[in-house]
Image (cartoon, rainbow, N blue to C red):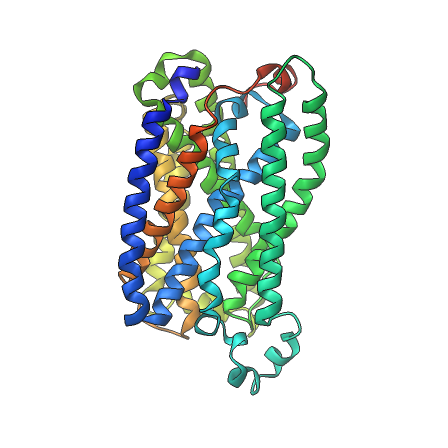
Length: 393
């Protein structure tokens, strides 16, 4: 299995360089958009930033989960999770440009708007630029420290036959999962939900967490099949692990859909003036077509494919489903961000909505592959309590 899923450092270096070149060129082109359409640039950048956060922070979250529950499924992707988690400090640097676009993105960051809005005045002690930036710094500092500590211990448990490090890791990760969930919740409130400061949803944080986990699981499946190639079929343990990951992808898909539908159902049934405009904007001006596309391509099609045992037994077919989910996760975030800036506007896709995500994702993927280059090899199976955690499904 080591040779199957962990390609040579030379190949990973080459892929990392190509990702860096593509990402760098796309970001260079996007910077031109900053001078031509400043507000649009920051809207597109926020979409891309939140998407990349989901992959890096999502890797950390699933790594914490596997450290606690164990299981064969995590042996296959443990090194990929570690590599993704160790990109969190870089993602923190990606936030810096957004500091200069606060007034372009958020109504509560504009003093002239706050002066005439009682609700925003009431929320100002929490929703203000210095405090939001401080919270974001705290989030990324904690996430980075957790990622470095957990990945270091994860590697240390592979040395020797002593289970002490593995037990320490499990005890540490339990409370850290709770902290992680809280930080994902409040960061999603800060970065996305506050785009419409009169609207609120108590389920939005959980929905963001579910979306992160879903996209991360899809990415893990796509990356191991991509890097392993046809050799993924050759190893029985690998095929079973990929099947387990497919079952988990199905579970995350259903959980995300349940939360998304619950948010819509509760808000629509309540019909409150401070809540319902969120969906009215997204059902008007052509946006409803995009919403229907998300329902079909982000849930219905993946769900129908993933309940098929053959799809999950075939790594190539499962990879196609994973790639669809990866793309639709970006579309879902775009659907949350773009309509928030005007009451009703016709559905449009600006070229920056494509260029900025390609650029930021390319840079992140380059960092991920570079981290993975130094973490080849299968984790120490003796320390993962596989006998206590059977295959999923």
